[in-house]
Amino acid sequence: MASEDGVRDGTSGAWQRIAPGIWRRRLPGWDETVGAVVGEDGVLLVDAGPSLTVGDQLRRELAELVGRPAVPVRWLAVTHPHFDHLLGAGAFPGAQRLAADGRTPPWLASDRTVTADAVRHGLDPADAERARRALPAPDRLVDERLVLPLGNGRRATLLNLGAAHSGHDLAVLVTDGEDAPGVVFCGDLVEESGEPQAGSDAEPARWPAALDRLLAAGGPAARYVPGHGAVVDAAFVRAQRAALAARFGGAGVAPGGTPA
Image 1: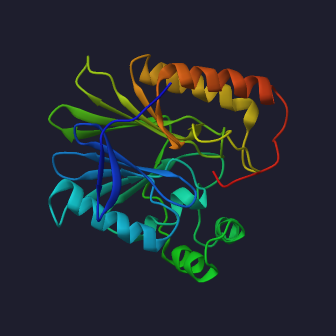
Image 2 (image 1 turned 90 degrees about the vertical axis):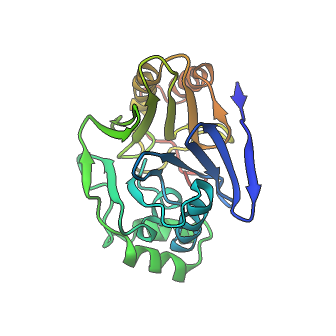
């Protein structure tokens, strides 16, 4: 079941308020999601969009959204190293950049694969190259989980769910106290607006197990924010997990399709 809360419309675009101080934005073009979690001393941004131009726009929008022109983005959690979620990272030089640890580095500015993929899917080559040159290395890699205290009882738990949709899948669970249901930023482990995509870096046979861990962390009452599409509930994630198990089983990687 998909669900939408109030949407703020204005010059800054459209941000959906999921819970107090927790927002997300569906970007035009590839319909990827970015999330913003307001803490006591700064904002945790989940993903950065596909270019420096978009990243700069997001930074301005956040200042308007939070009501503080100089609001700091203190943390940037990149759910996975695909161009539409990664290449805006250079627009947040003061943020601590967080990514999932894995068998290989999650991204390198010297690796032109991500920019080639961006250009193949329609990003201007000059914009892609500019973003690559500004792309900072991760500051911290999450082994299994990392808890960020955000103040006033709020915390963000970053979960390394291993290789599944990509080689480095990270999810972010935001909770306020022990009893309140959480909000889970899933990256592209969950997609609502289209069929989940598995490219050359995916390990589809591991994907259902990654969703099992995601559901165990978030629980049945959480709201799950896909990398693409509307906010969903646990029943949607369980159904997508069953569909992925049926689609991929223990087989190899399906051909890539749209960026994800």
